[in-house]
Image (cartoon, rainbow, N blue to C red):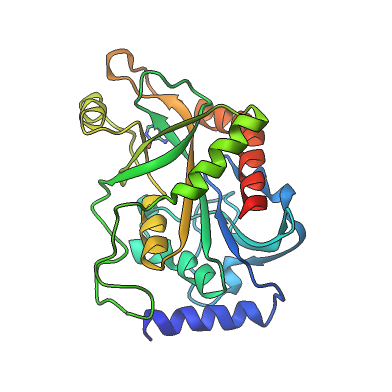
Length: 272
Ligand code: HPA
């Protein structure tokens, strides 16, 4: 069965159970799952109930699509995302994006936890992604191109929508949420990087590094969706002073930043 047919089957199964056409899709990053409280009249579908959706393997990871209204706007929210380091192909990681687009979502809002490479940043900062470098070694657009999903050679001169960025910066100013801007480098993981890799990443112009988001953004831009992406800088990765990373600390920082991230995203959706 072709990718297109798989998407149509997933859409059919969802539409038979959910009576809401989302205009915006949201993907929540590690430790940033509390956005669920912003969704009114929510209806959740477990990934396992949706044909062709990848299966969540990580214990304790929620795996559901939540439909409802955010600030009055019909939305679909992925609680639990898929990562290349879990063993999923880039196609599998991005299947939900393609389904959300086929359901009607024209805008994608993505969040993630990332390591900070810019020495001006602090742990807990939010960073709007202005651009990215794909160092994952994979790409969801490799393979035969189905023109119904997008064009063969999608333009990447401006993958992150400048108008959404402007709106987010205005909201951040008004709500007094400090918001940095920067370039996100995506690596496959799962290991954190070596000092030499951090030096390299800094040298090529990255302000943050993480293991997600870029595949989803590539699929979304391919599908002509408008994208806004934001990183929570959970730890600083400065090679000269690098200490062993603590996953516990990373999750703690993400949880602490979550109310700011939730406020920013829900206000942004209000404006879409
Ligand atoms: N690398 C380093 N630090 C991080 C990452 C990463 O991919 N994600 C969150 N903190």
